[in-house]
Length: 145
Image 1 (spheres, rainbow, N blue to C red):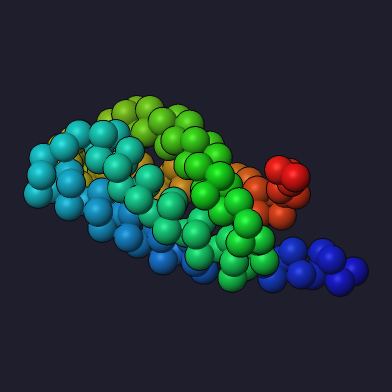
Image 2: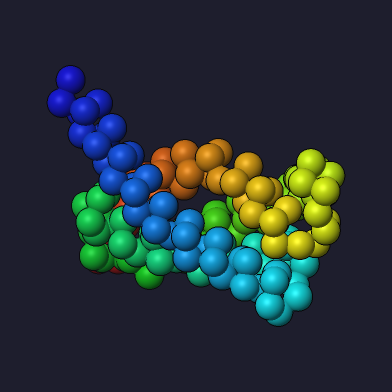
């Protein structure tokens, strides 16, 4: 099955790219929590949005073979989708950070607990992001003519 093999390869490439985005996201998250003093869920909104836009734009052409036409609209739709997912993940970080803080005997609003919470919310986001970004990149664009 060539299609399934290609999809697996694309997912592996997307995972590697997302890993780089995750590093950017996480470093920004930790800086916003540890240096700027933001609450983890607030910092996650900003850091994850920045990384999501970066990953989508690169994946659109290099992994999903997305069309150049309509990229602005596709990115806009992806960012709306991402905003919803980030809000859900950021909300989940409240109890996850508290749980991590108890496990680590650390500060609930501290960088260590935020890092553990980030690790817990990442895998389901990765799978959803791959599926949605692929569908958007390959969706037909309506002609205005």
